[in-house]
Image (cartoon, rainbow over all chains, first blue to last red; front, side, top):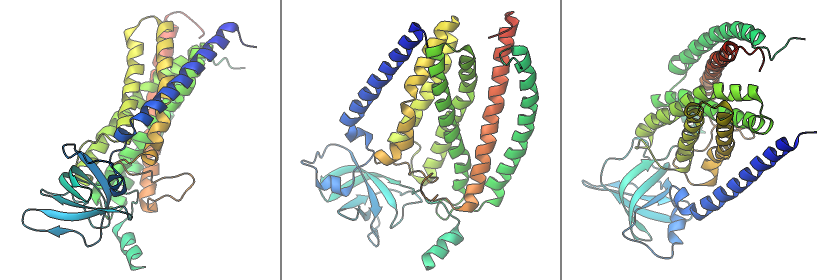
Length: 140
Length: 235
């Protein structure tokens, strides 16, 4: 039906595509560590060794009633509802930093349950609604 | 039967459609802006910065959609040497590129007040940057060579390779931990955007799609005129 050249080009592009998909898959798989923007407290617990000199990002929920602020520092607990991690930070936090909401803390691990953060990012979830709706949902 | 491959006929049709699309675009854009900036409520957490979403999300959708179309047509360009397809992909690229940049910039502006950072090298944002780079490569491949058949070959290969990036962008937020939030508008599950915010989002998407169509028609028109001026009366 089609000429030889057309068939050859179709085969050629198919081969390129397959090999590229395979390469990219393997590269991404081996770089998994870096593709992941942050680790969960459970990932931290499962670490074999802690590299104190290496910056690390930990993400999860800010545990309810865990935020404590003194004159210099802020302490809070990141949880993924299986494991927890205590974080301390001195500096200003983003507006959306709140108890029960997502957060990513960047800094150095002291041990498997304590992170010395030098940057706090608030994570926004996929829910968008007007304040009245949010109020109504809370009351239910 | 109408000869669609005669540029003279196509040019006449395009000129008519172009005016209609332009008028429709202006109406839909005005409607969308009023909905997005005035009538829609502020968000319970982000307050007014939610309005950035009405530009950010449609831009991202459309830049992804246009690249998908370019990639699929590029199979026809590369395998069957379809000249018309190559004119279409060439004319589609600029608006797709601009929308991918708009998505990145508005995302950055939204990221500062909500996340607390302008930029993060997470999977979604990096793969979106890669999309802009693919657009840029595609457009420059047409500029660097004057040999049309060579440009067709290179640009279509770039677009086909870039197709792999599209599902990566879409699913990056589900496959890996990212700072970027997961999709709110889902096909199979319930949408997590309140209906009062979904309306402006839908209208703005329609407006941007019409704008892309308009720019495409103008570019396609120019390409056809170029062919006509070369003295060829068919593609």
